Image 1 (cartoon, rainbow, N blue to C red):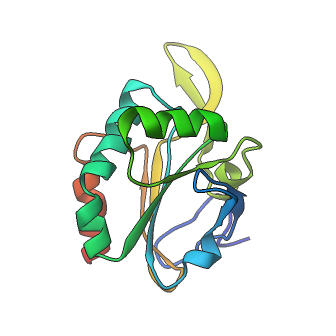
Image 2 (cartoon, helix red, strand yellow):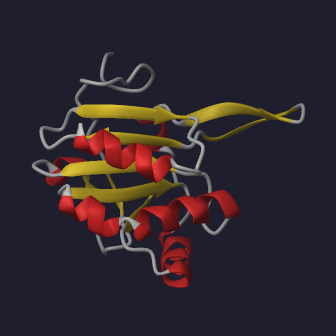
Image 3 (cartoon, helix red, strand yellow):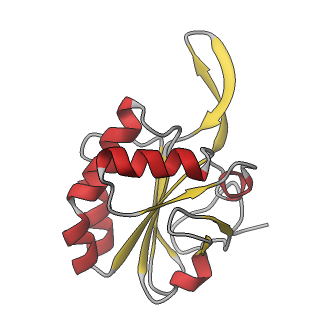
Length: 158
């Protein structure tokens, strides 16, 4: 079915979801309609690459706000883990917990990976820039952390 899972691309409606959030209660994508959304999936709280990515988004929060954008990070970590991650690095946005991987699967970010000959399932670092109308403006898969914040800001401007 187009618009869910594999094949999400620019112009598709972003699939709606609702998951627990560090802001209390839950975050539902459809409740953010009317604002730009940076929805990014990352493997694990408080690991080097994930920390660098989260801190770069935090450092750019004034720019994101200027573009009327909300940043939401999603991983399979628990809310408690997310809260510790936010506190340790003073992160400036909410994190959502997708412990059952429903949102990962909806956005096709739960992938079979291969590292040094070992095969395992894990999160593909991915970002979806979603416009105010709920449509996907840009998809970044297999994200490299360095410079990614600038790519996302540019996608929001276009």
